[in-house]
Length: 314
Image (cartoon, rainbow, N blue to C red; front, side):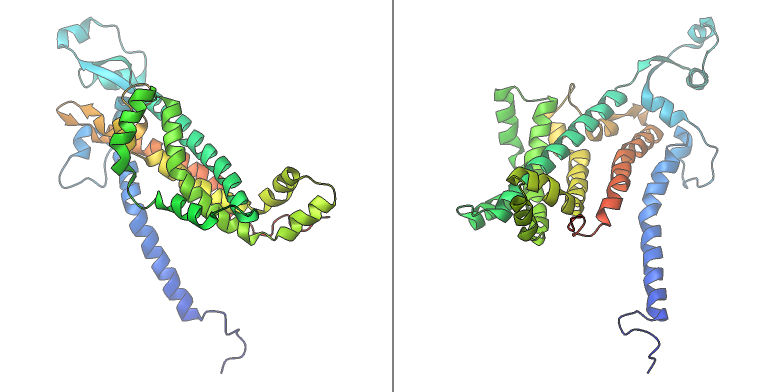
């Protein structure tokens, strides 16, 4: 028997198998994302060519089409115009078109930022307070209330889309930022409460009791003792809430049209000349992925911290 290695340490063969599985999973996962990114740098003709072009001449036509509104003009009209002043005007002119103004993508992207981050903040704020109350206090019918909260996740949100649509129309919340933030907060709240309660239960009550003996109030003990230790759970919950709020499609299609429309229902409607502008859609999808990726990377360091972070007072 090999006594030089701990029984809990995996063997060299097991490590190789695990590394192989991880590499295969990573490659399979990254293929569609890589293809979307590459399609954003193709021309319209190259994007729809068959067989698909793996090696192609890069073009920013997709990004130009994404951020601008264009119209086709006659050759005589184009010749009467002054020379293009920018590279993207020259690119559009090469397609016998002119730029008529900016597209609606930026405003839809901004709506996604406001609604996504607003709903995530409210979900975490309310979910943390509710989870702390369920974890620390003797709430009447606690188990029944927790089951009721969980039951809201037992059916697809779209199942209540019609009642919500009627209610929002009566209250004037349709196609508004505050209406979408409230809706996404309500949908995310059950997930936030259940996840955060599990983390709150793991934090010993003795730390708060010791802090209150030292003169802290309940709120001071909560903010200075409990929250630092619950950072791991808050970060993980925030990522899940943000992903739902950022990617949600069904409610956004039904309840928004102009003022509060987000990027998911807008991107598929990008129409090019003679059909769907796939490079512009791929460019919009690539830009749409960035905030969630950055948000996850920023919170990743908190996910690696132990649950006892900040437990020892100096």
